[in-house]
Image (cartoon, rainbow, N blue to C red; front, top):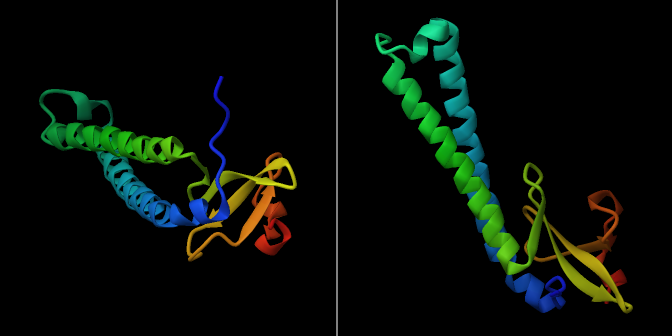
Length: 140
């Protein structure tokens, strides 16, 4: 069994641009997902069960929205998976939190990056989270 990928601070910081890109992609996909859901919900409120009937003039639009929702969900999942393959874990999509494993004083901890940070600035124990972040100078 292979353990988790463990990063030095320099290695983790080299991934920050990919974190930024992934979070931006997910943000965009989530916004498009919300917009498509609003449109689909409006059509469902207008037409009810008739929306899925062959006689409904808005049926093609509803079908396109359902397909778009599926594709956006797949895109979000794929983006999260791409980061996971690099050894990173998205902890909170909305806040833009990404963790990677790091060894500090002989124990496994998480280096913690938050959207907007130019480099990793904090860490926390693996069994805690963002609320328990400590400044990076405590981990060196």
